[in-house]
Length: 486
Ligand code: GLU
Image 1 (cartoon, rainbow, N blue to C red):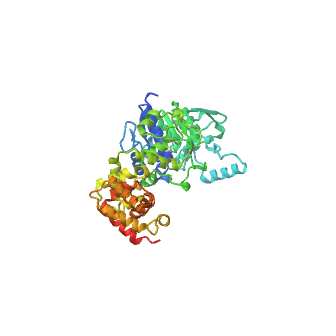
Image 2 (tube, rainbow, N blue to C red; image 1 turned 60 degrees about the horizontal axis):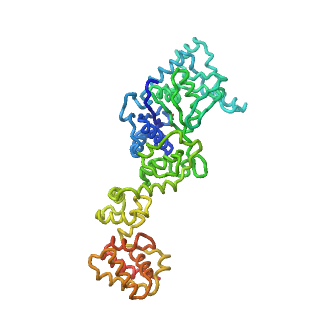
Image 3 (tube, rainbow, N blue to C red; image 1 turned 120 degrees about the horizontal axis):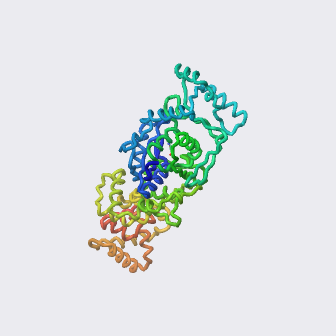
């Protein structure tokens, strides 16, 4: 290879959205490139016209950008090895397929779908482990081929896989891998519509784009012998391979849509932070060799190595993702959370409320340790924004006694005396009332929390009072006394 610089690529097929498994592949490629001062390339493998989905490329690019995985070369930004969309490179694949044909490494096949189907049925009846093409067209004479081509008979180009060969390669993660060429089909390289298959386009592009390491999901491991044969047939140096472990559901089945969200957009829309999703996805099959689980992207770049990627499937544990989301959120500066919260508010029923930043910052400080998502600053504590319209029934039963209204009225009149109260002022006033009534503070705090928030749990009581402000607190005590019935 002429280039000693690390060059890796993420090569998705645009099928609609970016799967979390795809995000993991993109991330590992990105980390490996950054760690090694290499280049990270985005290549769109869109040669399967049946799977083409409108808008899918834009979605992919948007999701990668959202995740912060900026590539150095790609369809929208160009680069020295473009175009980076395979559908714009058809002439290139044709040229290389012709080269293989002229060297006897590939051949035209004119078999009809009916013949192929009959062959498959026959092989199934014989209980062969997999259906394989019988090389029928490999034996056509040159004149037959010329005649068929001249007549325009539909054709494909197939790889000529020699039987009885051992196909070997080394994989950074799977180590030494061997396949028997008798189990490898004479793969179609160019389809009857003139488009290349994944195998041909992938190998030609990886070579022409000077890719040094192919890092991709394990589901592509069984394609690799075909690719290795192609590299050898062309006389090209093979890249290094690294096949990443499968992603599994907690029941160890293959990660599927059925058991939860698989699109990066779904996680984004649910309010996961990009930092948390990246951190989580990085740990799906990799660790630095210690127990550390919290990482920022720059630390991942520093620590990442392909050698530390596991062979075993990685279980997708949503609880861990939630935990990481809460951790990342907690470590963000309040000013950044303020912007995120305002964005969330603008999408919520509170959008016209004009809540001052100062109040929002107090809510953030009071709730930071208690939330998982930014939207929890709204929906887990609506009482900061609106007076309660109902009161938690269980807490009413537990904490609202016959003498509670009387106690709260006394507390209310003590609060009324306060001028611009701080949280300490509320606290002193409450202690004073508890002493005068000769009751424990809890006997006041529980019903007071219920009265002002409608709930039995929340942030520190006096923080809550301070954030609500005196007038609001007094009003809420009054309404609770009116509305809570035991
Ligand atoms: N186009 C393949 C995909 O959709 C790429 C596999 C590879 O990286 O070689 O994942």
